[in-house]
Length: 190
Ligand SMILES: Cc1cc2nc3c(=O)[nH]c(=O)nc-3n(C[C@H](O)[C@H](O)[C@H](O)COP(=O)(O)OP(=O)(O)OC[C@H]3O[C@@H](n4cnc5c(N)ncnc54)[C@H](O)[C@@H]3O)c2cc1C
Image (cartoon, rainbow, N blue to C red; front, side, top):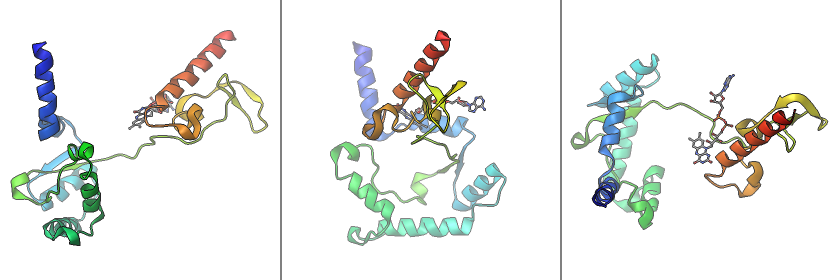
């Protein structure tokens, strides 16, 4: 009972003040996180990480200065799309609690700067290899290709899948597992 209350208090503290431990854990242990105390140092470390000269420190400084200057301007003059979106999200109480208010990037009180290397990945496929109801792959004429099965993302279940246009966040994994089960059953039937 007592540990349940403690967990709730910890959860509320995380909601209100952010998950500092998680950020620290990433900074300490994830090779894709880079920290620095100046924009020049950040750009240099980002380039070192990728082994390319892609990040231009001058351009980065310019962009950050523009963003920071926009925050300092009167709200009616905010014409930065990111600021508009933050302001919009914070109008709704549910989003307000998880969306930080405007914060300058190059702020000596908020150091270090953190850059995160990102990778492109496919999140949802909206199509895939055509199959029948046993997850058997069909050829262009709609005939079964013996011995070949396709399931999950590869068969279009990571997007609409069985839910079609009504698919929502969280409904993809189910279809992927379902199509895998059908393939397994079909294979075991021989
Ligand atoms: C960021 C993110 C968040 C998501 N959130 C949700 C969610 O909240 N709810 C939900 O329902 N769905 C969610 N999805 C979608 C769901 O996770 C995927 O649709 C599902 O995991 C796809 O399963 P899969 O087995 O078809 O493909 P994958 O999980 O992609 O598995 C394919 C596997 O094949 C391996 N592989 C690739 N090539 C080869 C090869 N040549 N030889 C051997 N192995 C190979 C890969 O390494 C991988 O392990 C999310 C997806 C992403 C990316």
